[in-house]
Image (cartoon, rainbow, N blue to C red; front, top):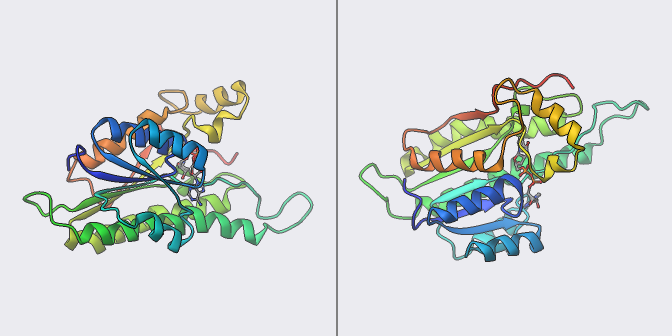
Length: 250
Ligand SMILES: NC(=O)c1ccc[n+]([C@@H]2O[C@H](COP(=O)([O-])OP(=O)(O)OC[C@H]3O[C@@H](n4cnc5c(N)ncnc54)[C@H](O)[C@@H]3O)[C@@H](O)[C@H]2O)c1
């Protein structure tokens, strides 16, 4: 599918991987709708790329529906997410806070599902774009934690495992509508999620990757998004984007 002239919803577009993706898709000619809770950053990015900002909580299906009102997306990118850390039982012997676990699932997994399913309904209602009946593409963001969650990542890993697991069945569900569904599982990328760490910690995290032994750049994530949009045979798969890193327990 071509990018030029298409409407794209990018959740988490106010920061990090989502922001880089919104900017790159806009440079390629897409009309961007940023869905985020960070109004200040979201409005600033949207203004710079000639897009629109929508104050949406992806965990709330009604909020997603309100954000999508009047839009006709062909491209749906979910980058909104949180990465809380907590052990199943902490040093004091307390069990993991159930509300924190639910919050990670609500934003990362149910939020991704809300946006993807509602965008899919809007895509399926539009005319096909080409000879093969393509109507749109959905790209969700999992994590290598879906496969190698570290200590303190039960909630995050479970939420991202869910994002990875729904990729194939959602692609199968939407095949008749000509909508593709993919997921990217990033390794370690230099975004505000990691930028707060001291330089030596960033360097040591980056050095864990076999090659290239550094943190990924948000544009390298955005590049893969653009490639998936354009490559019609990519469907129903989770792609690791991780410089061959395999996360250790901690
Ligand atoms: N940075 C990494 O190394 C890395 C690695 C693997 C996976 N990921 C995943 O990639 C995605 C993007 O991560 P990032 O590093 O760019 O993070 P980030 O913190 O820079 O950006 C996340 C954005 O999501 C928004 N957001 C959070 N909760 C929201 C909600 N309920 N509704 C709408 N927007 C919400 C935030 O306001 C923020 O703008 C996340 O899903 C993250 O889990 C990141």
